[in-house]
Image (cartoon, rainbow, N blue to C red; front, side, top):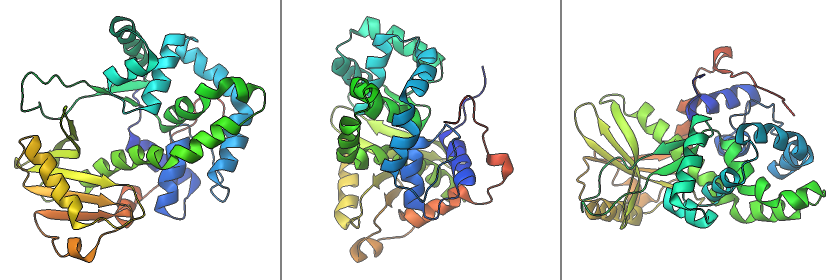
Length: 304
């Protein structure tokens, strides 16, 4: 089985191919079209591109996707539930109204086909009896977009009516972009902490709390972080909240990290130092430095 490109490899390929002018737009357009190696005209609005490249080609794209899913209704229900929710197995199966036994078999097949991958909380919860469910992530951003905003509205789309998809995307797009921002933030942290390299990185969650970024360095330091996908500046309260989340998880980080799309308040900037690190949108530029032809991932299948 061919190796699945990482999210960072997909992002670098997308940026090499489409040459975005600014990082915020790069992340948003990548959240929709990432992983497909389609040429995307970034001078057009996302909504215009979604209609022309995806919705008007629904029949053809649907046909290609069903070759992977074998038109299995359980698989489609699970994929849409994951795309619309927090990705945890229990909540996805509940949303899809599918039993655990039936669902686990379908999930295994979807993972085997490289549509999904499992993610586990980086640390065990402090209370042993608190069983932590794994999360399911899409291997490519486009597939997540498809099952969040296209597949659930297939009946109206087939009739040429795109209203449901358009309204759903307009209402949820900020939350939708946020997961891509978080996942790329992990890559940013790995690239940025060079003096003491990251050897393990992920997220933490249990019944009481969740932490967007949890990592360990080569020297054994613990890094905990939060990602804020908002145009508002992150304030000092974000650090206090992160510290409380770590307390609930019984974790004692050496370094706190805040990644904020909208920048930082002066009060928070004043706390920046060896144990508090701040990363803004401009820092994501390090992820797409030195792009070249070797970063481009060839399109497999139709380009639409």
